[in-house]
Image (cartoon, rainbow, N blue to C red; front, side, top):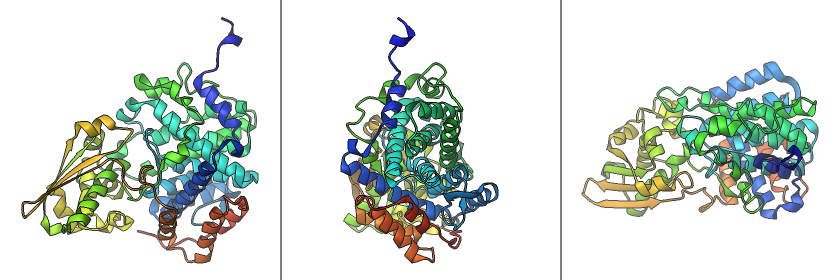
Length: 468
C-alpha cells in the first residue's frame, strides 16, 4: 500500500472537522450552550482572581506580559495572550467551581475559554469565531479525555492538564480561523507540553492543581502562535507512534473515540456546570445529604452515622479526612459530607482557611464512613453516583441514591441559576454596572449583536478585595 492510500488517523480526521466548523453546522442550542459556558467560566475567573494564587499569576502576567491586548481577570490592565491564558485559566480553576465534561474526567472551560478569549481579543476576531473556538475546544477536551482512557487517570495523570494543552490549541486555532494543517502543527507542538500529575490530592496539595488549567491554556495559545509563524510539529502527535495516547494513555487508550459519532452529540451540550465548590466525584454524595436533610428535617445534632457508597476512585483518592487547606478540603469526601451535614455546601466560604477548623464540621467527620459500591463503581467514569445511608441518634435510617447531581446534563442549571452564580461570584467587585454589562453582552450572543470588544471593555475591572 502506498503512503498516499493510507487513510488519515482518527485525530487527523477530527482536526480537519474542527478546522472547517461553522455556525451553520451547529444546532442553535449548541451555540447557546457555548455562551452559557463562557459566562460560567467568566464568573469562576473573577472569583478566582481574589485568591492568593490569582494574585500570584496576575502579578507574573503584569510583570512579564504588559502591553498586550488580552483581558486579565479582576484587573483593568491588558497583557499578552499567552500570559492572560495562563493567569485566567488558573483563576477559573481556582476554587473547584468550573465545569466538567462527563466521561473525560476533565475541566474544559478552564483551558478552552481563557485561550479562545485571549486569542479573540488579540486577533480582533468576531464573536462567532470565539463561540466556534469554544465549541471546538470543548469537543477536543471531551474526546481526547475519553480517548486517553481510565488508566491515565488511575496512574495519577490529571486529564485537565494533559488533554487541556491540546484542547486549548484547537480552541485558539479555530478562533483564529487557522487551516487544518496549521492546527495539526499547533496540536503537535502542544502534545509535547501536555502535563499534570495529581500529587495535589495527597497531604499538602499546594496551589499547583489550579495552575494545570492555566498552564494548559497558555500552552495552546503559544502553540498556535508558533504554528501561525510556520513552526511545525509532528502531525500525528495524538494517535501516532510515541503519541499522546500511546505514551500517557497507555493500554486503555482508544483513538477511535476521536471521531466516533462526531457531529451527533456536541460535547458542549453535555457540560456539567458545578453547583458545589468541590471535586466533581463528591457532588452526588453532597446532593444526597442535602436532600435527606431537607426531606426529613435532620439537624447536625441528630446525625449518628453516615455511610457513603461511591466508586473506587472516590474512595481511594478522595478519602483523606484531614483537609488541612482549601484544596485538600475540596477533594475530601468526608469533609464535604460534614459541610453538607452542618451548613451550606454550595457556599465557597465553607472551604476558606478560616472555616476549615469549624468545630461543627470537624465533629461530623468521624461519623462519615466510605465504602466502594459495586454498582456505582461499575458506572464510573460515565456517571459519578453516590449512595448515602444516614442513621440518626434516634435510630432512624434514611437512604438516598443520586446518580446525577444538580448541574449535570440530567439535572441542568437553568439560565437563572447561572445568573445567580455569576452575581454571587462577582459580587465583591465595586463596579456593578460593569459586571452587569458582562451579563448583557453574553445575553446578546444568541441575537448576533454581541462583540468581543464590548465583552473586553466590561471585563476591565479594578481589583476586588482579597477573599482570604
